[in-house]
Length: 492
Image 1 (cartoon, rainbow, N blue to C red):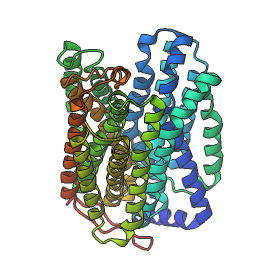
Image 2: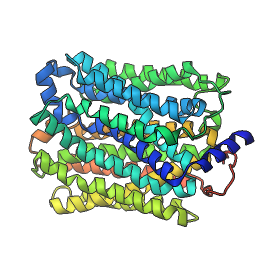
Image 3: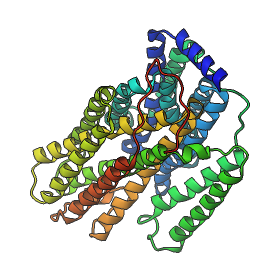
């Protein structure tokens, strides 16, 4: 271990600040590609259906990407710990670009769905690797300030994705939403090629548990299929959905057994047993459930109850997006200055809970201005948690486990988002809101009652309360600085 650490330190010393900034810019650009492809497709889906036919399979354009991207995130973390960041990141970019090429040239819906699934195989790695590489370059005490860059990347994707997708589909050609990835991906590779060579390559004495990886992918895919199909394609109590949940639980149990029995498990038990990792990943899981679910159904409220058009509701969503970036920026700048840095996230989540509770209370009579103000407050409060939880998890593990820990964190964030959409959709449906296809049917109808939306806002607030509890239970460990030596992972 000492030899590995010394190699790491030597490599870090060989990187200038400009090279570090080039690497960070390149990995964020690669992450932007994956984030854009989660938002750019939706506006073009009607045009794609008209061009390729088989409109009943349109949801698979989104689901295919989500399944593979979520399931692959932990595997990329382990691979990068074994084989190094540069080849792993390059493989993720090339797989993503290959999927983009297949999707752009797709002659029919089946090939397009296959291309999207291939994109997801690479996209899951881009999410995990961006934060892992930043973790390699910057000590935890300074790392939080880069969280604003990551949140800004997501905000740009959330805003630019729908605009580009709609513009390409309406005025040019739908395939451009995939062609655009090729020059951007090649640019990212060119930017990071030379400086990334100086990053240390992890010791090759480790191995990858491919059976455990296969079990993780299967278990995750079954769970995500149940969450995506439940309440829409099939009723929640149908044999299909219950069967998927049962099959997923069975495979998860086998995966857990594999973690215990494998000589070198896919996810180290030391990582999973660390109380900081457990609490930090759980907090982001719950936070994303509230955040993504709210982002999906808030436009439904704006259109179906307040009467906004699709473009107007998109502009109104800027509040929660920019609020999230502002919250992450604030926490990122203040974290190095606070001994008890966790209090920043605790205060932010409390602020978000209050804002959501007020929004639920005034949902039936609120004006657009107040909705924007309150959702901006929600975004700001949620944004403070992302850097604090991420840095806490990365700071809690040895550098040799940084990729695995970050991969697990990325995986739980994605899984939380999928769960949040399903949960809030079920709540809305229970109150008579026709939420089919992530709210598209409800958005087309004008609804006089705000009760379903008030319930959705309250459940989102409850998820933030659970986030608060997870954060409160997370131990604080002093953040390592640039001059601190590597400390062993603790299991508090």
